[in-house]
Length: 493
Ligand code: AMP
Ligand code: MG
View: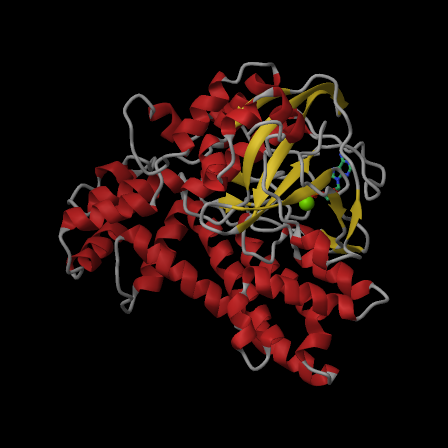
């Protein structure tokens, strides 16, 4: 390398180059005593960056925001957002910065972003900071989702700042380094559509098409094809959430990506007992973002995207509305089809037969009525393939209530024309043994906040291989003890 300073990242910053008007150049706040808490070696390898250099003081200074790495062009991104249904025209990155973009080893463009890096012009009343606990949560849940095969942003690192953050109590501060396919949100389009410059939405749409939905350009109406493609990506994403019992918790339009990745793990949680009304966020009083509402909310958010795109869909507003409405109306069917395919995989049914929908609905009703753990019950279904119903039965206080459904299920399984071992092995790849259970997450974050990262690392290891049952990890597969009570999470601020 000679005298040349080692470059931590080979940045190529297309967002800054192509989309002036959608950001404010800004610098991160300097923190007093940066210390790397967690570093994602697997992700670093995927990005093709030098993990050793990032763990060294110069690397840590970059990951916490103290020294922008060579080639970075840090900006606070501008976006609007419907928050719990109410519109905020000017949200933006209040405590975050896009550092720049890199190409990973597969040639995919990925954003490198800091969260908790100090106040920006979008900070409003906020302090621009983040606490260790919520940043560890975002790291953990992102990795858990990734291991479950669900598109998601991922954390490269959590770095403690050495500074305190004032929340209900004083807490240790941290900065999250986040990697995403991009940080374009539904709210980015809403923001672009608000402005004086009508060409901005088009530039943003062209950018998003090139970056995420390039096949759209082949279409007669590229913007329509783009919108269809975002709708399809979100229908599939939310179906995947539902299939693992994930509750995002704050599905505001600024927290919904154009790429189809899950973003912004704040008051999120995995359900334990199956319950469509499950809500975990302390600020979601009306249950707007309850588990079972997520598909409808996604469609609502996509309607906001459609509104921003209208001028691009057709010169005639009436006809643009008609076109957009037609696409939006296809969302429920697309969602149900994705979800149905996923549910049949969870039950070991490869093709769709008459009666499957009722079989699935009746199972969910049973689970709901008897407050049965969602992950455990689905995981135990693979035993039924081998004639053992006891694993599922034993989850019920009154095991007999499962028997009627089990008879129907076994009859349906009899028509599956595959070797039972193949069927049960495939089911065990669709039904995780280990999800990030809320009581375990809380335990890990509390220890991590206190300086002990042991429980966090162990839980991270467990949820990073969610489908492989391992002895000694029984505790991670079990529902919360009754003493854990009703779970509440707080917004990750
Ligand atoms: P969220 O609901 O966490 O996605 O955040 C919504 C908006 O609030 C975004 O514009 C954030 O940048 C901003 N925000 C959240 N927490 C803070 C904070 N502590 N300081 C400044 N802005 C914040
Ligand atoms: Mg957000």
